[in-house]
Amino acid sequence: MTDSREVKPPDWSEVERVLIIMAHPDDPDFSCAGSAIQMARQGIEVTYMILTNGDKGNHNPLITRRQLILMRKEEQRKAAALCGVKHVLFMDEEDGFLRPTPEIRKRVCREIRRIRPQLIICNSPDRYISGRGYINHPDHRNAGLIALEAIFPAADNPMFYPDLTNEGYPPHNISQLYISHAEESDVEVDITDDLGLKIKAILCHESQFDDLEATEKRMREWGGEEQEDGSKRHFERFQQLDFRSRPRRGPNAADKNAQNSES
Image (tube, rainbow, N blue to C red; front, side, top):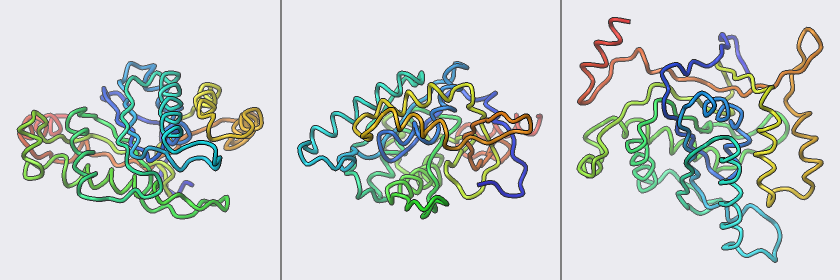
């Protein structure tokens, strides 16, 4: 959904590393695989962080939870490789019961400080119902909340987790945050030319579909927007928080703030 704000294309000119934080295996592919494909093609290092183990993502009683966990991890690795995503982190929280606990916040903060991304993509923490009559999974909302609480106030504040600093992971400021499936969006990525590859990534998650052919057809029809010339374009949209012009804190703040004042 868009609002009255100007919707613009993305600016990844200063982005070297991206961290995409999602709840389940397959969530990055549905939410932002097209964007990940384009970033990886530009030489940006993309990392997926999957917060839960996905052990509730099937209704087949003949599959054990352990089997499903292993299956879904392998599916996500294959999908990531198709998209050019180099790293996939599995945080292994229990599917269906993800909560923004102090423990998971610290674990996510540790990875933010270790990876040091300029851009983070996460789910919306306040999307309960979709316009298509779909109840949003609570893990999606909580994944967004966990990401936001790890970014601020924890990731860039040396008073949080001094033990992480002692491990070699000092505070880190991100430059941009994209929120997927937000009620309002102001950045759109045209993924029309990469839709086929995005669909292939989604179809790597075979445990999630009964009919792969029907799923592919639905994916191609769903979300396309007709243009004035009669063609259809496909987009991934995000609500952006841009921190690049804001004063920075921390050990490298003086240099960064000086750069911002000169630009």
